[in-house]
Length: 151
Image (cartoon, rainbow, N blue to C red; front, side, top):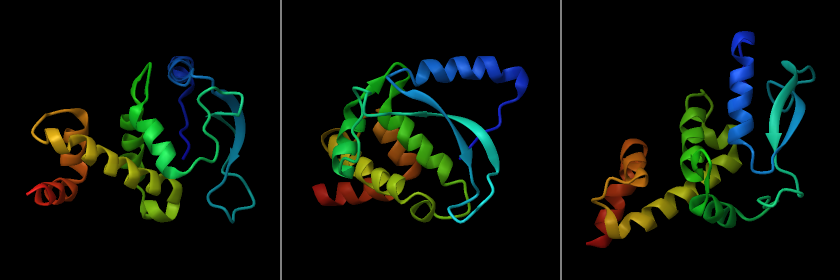
């Protein structure tokens, strides 16, 4: 996914992203392709933020359960990491291809984060915390299933 930033907004957006992604991420320039079979990039020289092994928060190719646990308990200067990932999932679901097809890693992470959110809420299902509001809006079936399991 890539966004084109209007030239009038470039400095403000870049400043915001540099603040949000400041936990040791490196700025990289990449070419963006329509899919894995494309030979010609749609966008050349797009800017992205990547974590490298030099980053203290870098988890590398850790198992999904480990990644999800780390994301679930972490908070950056811009808020909860789980909120960031789950809002990304919601945005990705706007595309026509199912999430599991276009980004199986993100899909697996979403499933594990949902499992962690339900487990964390089980004792507090009546509370209006972020996890509850998010699941109620996007995954109501998980809440009804967890209530049935508690009875």
